[in-house]
Image (cartoon, rainbow, N blue to C red; front, side, top):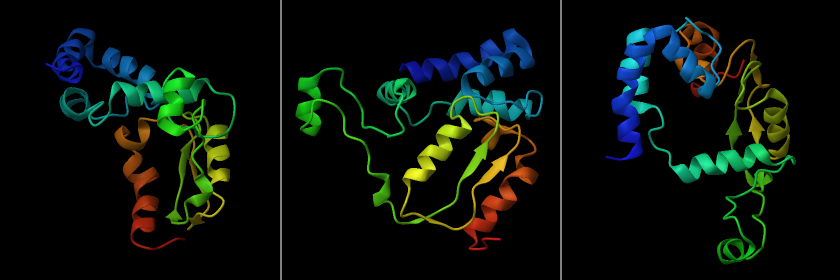
Length: 174
């Protein structure tokens, strides 16, 4: 059993033991959601926590996220292997190079939450500023009070966020 299998198996048991509000608080402390009480209990516990939360990621991905949290510069850097020789083998330089976000030339839209504890608004704006050649199809949307998990899990996302996302996907950039 992988660690993710264990998490998926344990999540419903822990959520039942903590009761729903305690489970949401625990996950929201990690995921950065702010709409406490604004979630569908059966979907959040049975589907999200038990089956899909952390799906498709790895410990290295989480470690890379942690590395990006600790750096003080605006650049988005590649994974740091922890020593100069390993970085030289991987990248040809002793420190991980920054991704050149100016190379991105596609269409883009951005949605930010003012209460996101995982990606602060100023960090998101600094990263968007690095996308100097992106074709932003509309000004970035700021969703007041939204945290990281709210973009997917909040019940009011269907009215506060998804209409704008659907408009972009349909080519309406109003």
